[in-house]
Length: 131
Figure 1 (cartoon, rainbow, N blue to C red):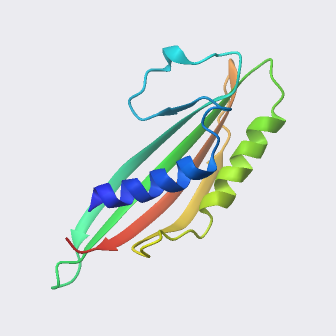
Figure 2: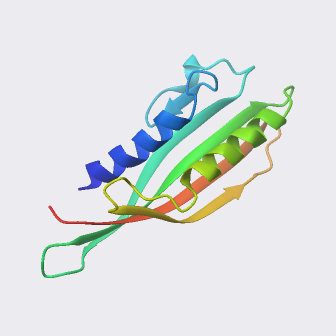
């Protein structure tokens, strides 16, 4: 069931974000391959708790999907800001095509970094599925 949630989130992301233009690293991919003079991003899904909620074997799954955008200090930040806005618009109030998964909350932060400009975008999702 979790695989269906991850597949839906990955499909939504990869079909709408230009992964070549912005050097997107996916979960467990080493970052040695990126050109650190250009914007690069990280995309990963973090499953949370899961519980049985109905006698018909329906499971409630919670999780987050994280999109980090890193721009080198020497680069203009408008592209990173635009990419953040594109990502947040992509998942705002989104439901999976099978209507089992929905995004119910979003966060964006800009932690202070000395060597780069970093944006962290997080979507909180939940699903209800039966095996």
